[in-house]
Length: 294
View: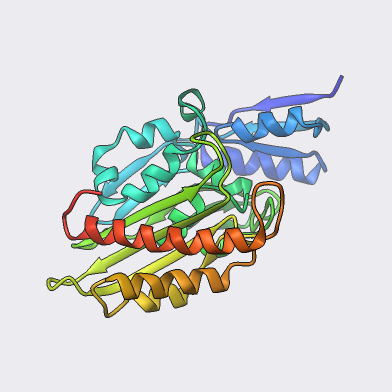
């Protein structure tokens, strides 16, 4: 039988010290934020001995703080908890919707945005939404604290920038500006509880005349990592996010995509779909920023 140990530190300092001690002893550790991905990994055959470090007792990983500073989202906050915050959903609806797509209602009680990000799947639903919102990772480790943009955090399939002994504490999103909104869309083969074939996140800011003054676009499941699409954002800025601008953004996303062909979709199909999702997400974000319903 494989040897597992469980630790649940109750402070950042205790967690950092524990991880540093296990690292020095060459003992494998694995962070538990929600655990839904970890259970799948264990069942799939990765059952080598390790110390599971549960970070849910650390106050900084459990915070949801929203205000003039923006949003601070602890790495262990569950999707269900996030979805219950009407104030967050009003300003970051795309992110909340993306988190709500992770698994079933039962999974929502455990799965976290932080865990979804650290799992580093190209099809992770919250990652395009986080990138579109210019989110920052707050990381703690033996060498102190550091910050990394989410757009740079994932470096490959199931690979991220965390160094040995480090863990994700929280995510910080910039303040939501007036007449600003986001949207996230994905395409899946089934009606629910499936992995994205392609996805897109868009955040827009409009001026008083409805002209786009800032935009961020990110696409998922069409490369080894989620991709920011600066050309798509540029196509929207300076416009009223009309059909021509949205189509130009769609074409930019399709052009940047580097998908593979597999049993869930061909390369050409995914490239087409991610453009369609970009266009539709831009329209939803525009309508939300204008105060309409989407």
